Length: 373
Image (cartoon, rainbow, N blue to C red; front, side):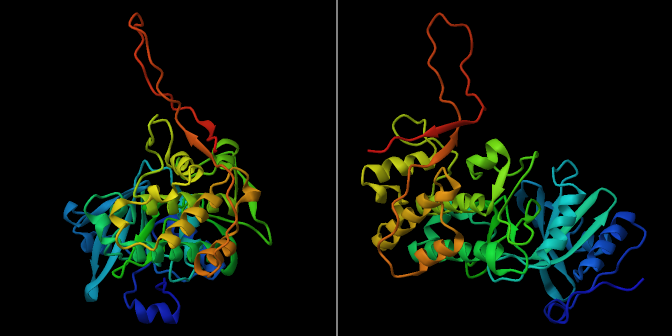
């Protein structure tokens, strides 16, 4: 059996070629699918991964995502690679794994993480990515110390880079891709803090000129899901736009969407942002550490765009081409957003002294509309 390698260009950048092990039937099936698709992603042997990570030593552990831990691997020639080890109990099964390998190998953009190889060994499923020394965006913006490294210009560049990456998926790549799990933890940062979108296990290809689809199996992350996807299983390029809007507001504020903000502590970040916008106090949303470095008109533009992206009606949300134009252009007159729909937990109800039932927060999803003035 011959070795499987990448394209000539990728081979020069990544000279390490890993042996294909024909003993694993799942690998064979995956390779057959890969060859039919004309995808050239190297297969890495299990032994070389164990050697590179020192048997998945905690010393090399970079963090843990929704589908499993990620390790730093040192391969021959001093090549550093991120090794994503999917958990045996992960919701990402062989189909999602195959989807990520075959799909991401076709994508080439400076704001998308590059897949370098993969491995399947019995119940183990491994993905090898280019190593991102600064890990993920959420590790910076939600950390009280690290967030200080992200001054306004850098945050704006990150927002614009993410927008360009999503635009590529929706419009400029050979395939029309809906990511379905865009969030701050899936945005990786390289050595220069440039953003790269990762985790394509839930991504879907929309055939032809289509822009939407539906599913009976809703997968993703609450807080970033659009209402129509979370409640009805309907996803589209506009559900990615919604997720992007949440990410923008998190980057600006340094707050997670799933927290409770405001005097009532019953609103998530979207509701909090809309309340400030309605009271003409939108700049109060901004992370205080940005006060000295920010360009206020640019911050207002980003808040405006973020709120346009999280509007309830998908038809009201802009396309990513419009988003990039608004962010990168000189135009000052932007559309006025409608109030967003956002998914929150039901607020805690007060109990009387005679009640013997414990008070709890319901995990049911509710549609909440903030009333603006």
